[in-house]
Length: 294
Image 1 (cartoon, rainbow, N blue to C red):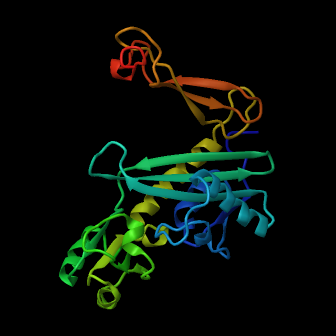
Image 2 (image 1 turned 45 degrees about the vertical axis):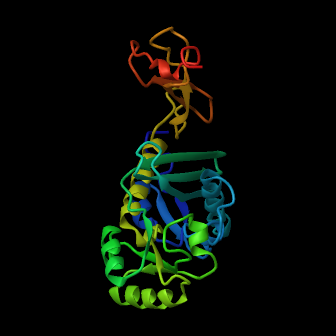
Image 3 (image 1 turned 90 degrees about the horizontal axis):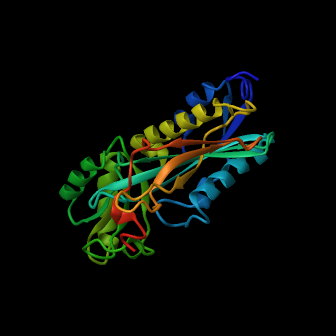
């Protein structure tokens, strides 16, 4: 087995109805595989960004489930699928963040690999508008018309929680033309009890080039992993499986919950390799220490 022949000539099934092959096909060609898209399943049934259907399970679970749907439909042992999550940035108080997860299922070898990519480079946004001129301003900030929008009749004049704002008043997705934007705005102003319209970015990949770039990034990370072999048995897919805490406190030397090592483990022979996150002299801030800051 050479570095590149593990999946060379194999077919991998991508389950997607949102044209994600535009982002994933090239990285899969880098490992010598051919990507075939299965689009006859409505992936919105597994959850929607716009909230009509809640995701049943974690993003990792749904990504694997989605991959297996295409594999079963086309009788293939290799499958791939992507799930994204968007919301407030965990560290930036006024920023947003997006997490792209890609699942690769290899039933020939009994493996499931996941790769993740987190980025603040997203256009995820939502607000309430009461005039078309304001809507046009907001739409431009959201990337319209190269990025699609979702509109709904607003249930209140000011932004509250999303579920309350949209209730059961209907919505229109994938708006990418000025004509459709104005038409939908006029219709929903009439339907709204407060004469306002809820607008948000359409985060589906085929309506969001910014997100598509992130999917390409995580697919490239996966391809790199699939080309990486175990240093002991040469089995493919050697890569990050966990993170290990335990960096010592700078004040008292107690082990903290600060991550200090990246751990890679081989699926086949269980060979483990730890890569330090910091140099050997690094110590954690006492604020993270269970002794200094209990």
